[in-house]
Image (cartoon, rainbow, N blue to C red):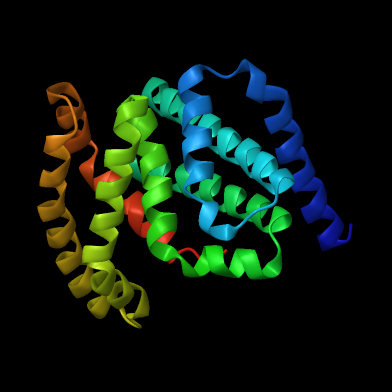
Length: 214
């Protein structure tokens, strides 16, 4: 089968499933979808695009929720969880590419800070069961975190050997660990505990989205 046809078919199935599940989602999922879509307003989308992007974001949030429940039930390893989240991330970005114009998608790709902050907020929303009121402060912190460690992230992804990557990864880990303290101001004590239990994973999620090329 032609790869282009296969790609379009897979995206169509992604959107079809999203259309069929939007009305069945809980309010938090819909709120996350709305919030994430609003944070993509810098793409200057048409009303039709906004609706389609919303559906994609709801589907991604749903997939994250389902994965969170599945990984808990199966006691999945952090590596397995990260691989699964990376798959959701890539499927979402591929679906976005089919909806956005080439210029819009290029802008989306170039805005690494917003991308990384957005996806990490989506993941944190499910893991920490964030309230709607917490979404904005958590997103703002995530955005600030990425801004502060951007040089370290760029150095990590530009490293051409394992030694260089290991050195920059240590610096990045230290910088992200320092930035974690900001969440203490907006999370409940229970959420803070859960966050720190999953801190390494959430740092990896941020790094994964920042470095993705598709």
